[in-house]
Image 1 (cartoon, rainbow, N blue to C red):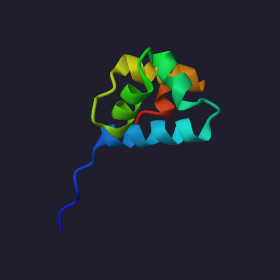
Image 2 (cartoon, rainbow, N blue to C red):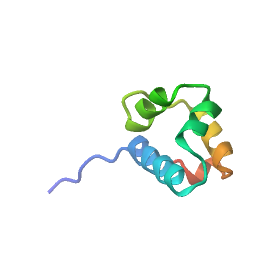
Image 3 (cartoon, rainbow, N blue to C red):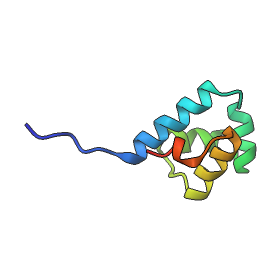
Image 4 (cartoon, rainbow, N blue to C red):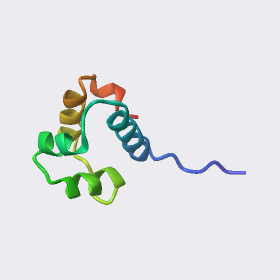
Length: 72
């Protein structure tokens, strides 16, 4: 039996979505911090559009956590 491939990017998106849900940061505020629209944020968090390292860093700063806490 072979193991399914692991997507660290998908795991990172899961961590970001979990942090967003658990924090006081609204999706609208996160979008403003990234200087994108709410629809663009939804595309990025769904995996349809790739988040850049800079955007992940900005989200970590917005959440008030080290980047290592939201990157798999």
